[in-house]
Length: 317
Image 1 (cartoon, rainbow, N blue to C red):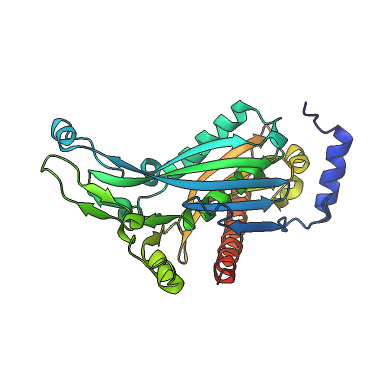
Image 2: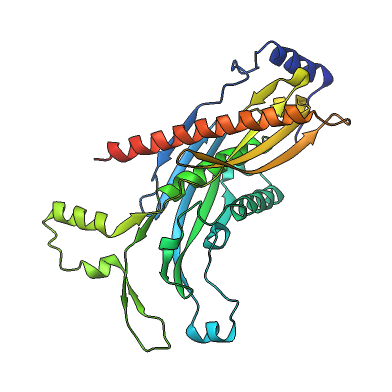
């Protein structure tokens, strides 16, 4: 059972923030420690584990071939293969026993928010064109499985952590380079996977086998996958980044800002408002300032995630 803050506790938190001090010792612009482990599940096509504050998230990806037959296309001219991230990716969420207090309703809400976030992305944010083996007929679909190992359900930063973990898992996802074997004109070709093509490789030639493996897969370009950042607007216009649940309870408003970044170009994907205690609303300029601060934090998180991913990749060799 969740217990809210008393009036005195909220006043104590707000007074500390007004002096630039938070209960956990951070400054108002400081984020909690972010740790990313790339490919912790070697049998998945891609995976990541992200520890951010009290949250611990494990994500794995799988690939599935989907198709439309020629007859289906003939009878339905509007049927097309996916051309957007929302139609190329599916999500599933679950929680570990250690997070058993997490409700199914909360999981459904997270699933809906994540699906809506990826639905808002432009088609060029993630290079899904390479997933098409035959245009409009045969393509790879990515299934993203999210396991919440540990969390505090009352904190909005849970969704922030999930978006970072999903982005890292997508970037580590390997897609096999397949060969297509022709069949009848009205039928889809047979798909030959890499392990069926390299049966004659000598088991003793380890180096050649490793090079062959590297050439049989390509990585999904998920640089433009979105990251969600939570910020709080406090009294006197003070903006707090990466808040904990007590700071959210004491805030005038809690904003969730979703950002995607590809190269040096940043795109605002959406803004949501969780709470607004002030009945008179908020100043527009203050909201703009909060969004800009959230974009800065999103860029910082993306740089940290990319740097840790690169380090893990090179430490493998």
